[in-house]
Length: 203
Image (cartoon, rainbow, N blue to C red; front, side, top):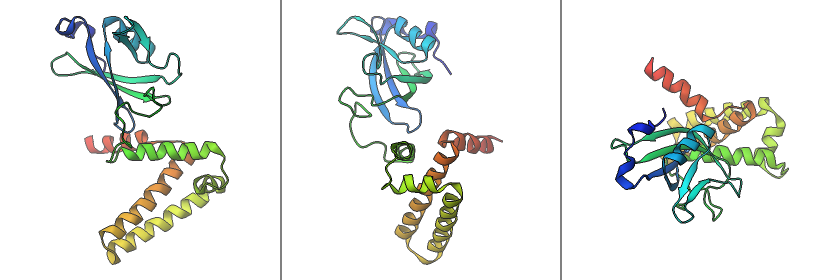
């Protein structure tokens, strides 16, 4: 879904609208910028977030100097048509301080953190650090990863019967980690899994 430029309330703030940026995978709030009509047009045209700098009085594409751009997946308007939400895939840290979010913190506390864990696994896969368990597991191949998933699944099932909730959570964490390693090895992410779940729910 894309915002309708003509229906937006540009007159409320002298031709400017606040634009919040959300990580598509984790749901984390990354930054807040401002857009005029030209900035939104450039964003929709190029698929990369462009804002209007009130201090420099010009358009600027996020990452134009650092390379840490924001690839835009969707743009939504709020119910009053006077604010925007950009759903993006960040290409590097969003904040100029080098952090993933301008709002600090260690990331989402809920299920959205699984997307950040997936990013960590991908980084370990690319790093080539032989001391990394993740890298070693990926090097051993899919049969070994599948074996670990089977083992962790059995351990979770046993924990459900014989252990308390903390024990179940520990085993569930082990299973989720190895599932993410498999997803990295097979080249798919949470977006594909969620699409299947949504399709089943709606069908």
